[in-house]
Length: 193
Length: 78
Image (cartoon, rainbow over all chains, first blue to last red; front, side, top):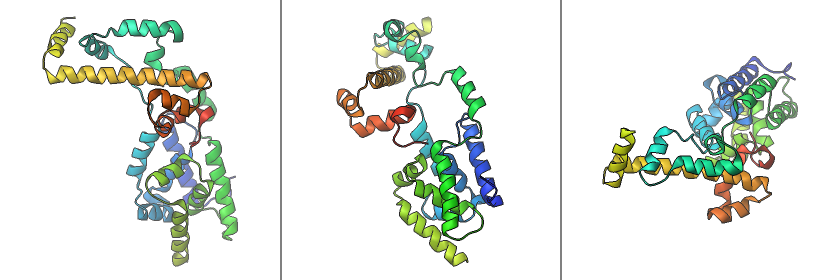
């Protein structure tokens, strides 16, 4: 699948892979690809994204906003604070435990350690279905543009064409029309040629 | 223990620190309960709209907050 990638595109995929691993061994998602494309090392894709107002910092913040779990574990300090307003956390937990099992409330939203490990061994370096689709679409974009190799700009075009991923959601949430980004990229290519 | 008692007497008074800490803890408790019950409702086949109505929030708000954690119901995927 990667034989026709330029070094630049390979590096982009490697950066996306590292981002995925650092975020807890998720498979590589479209948002990891977007982050990798926003790196100054990604050339044209980076310039176009920056021109649209998106840099790595902004994207990281957006990812944190979109994929963070909504809860944090309730600790001893929380229990003490709740007591001050007449709530006994232990009895709340016991009641809920009757229906949902012990610790259900403390661990909701967390991925059990065992599952994390299983995911790690099975999925490291793999792509989510949408991210895989992005790579396939990048190949199609390269063919359509009669380019012999797939560069990082084709990955960005693939990401835009895929349309439904978390990456596109970040674009849309930041007021970026994916079609405009595509046009900006194509225009820049022509100027560079 | 004495720390908790100190905190208790402080919170029933007007110490902002203790009062705010209790507010934070209560929010964490509410968030945990909400997450647990949203999962529960989804397992019972409730739609995002039904869950949103029950929580008196918009469907977009509840979907945005919880859908990404549940691959089966995901619209925007990673």
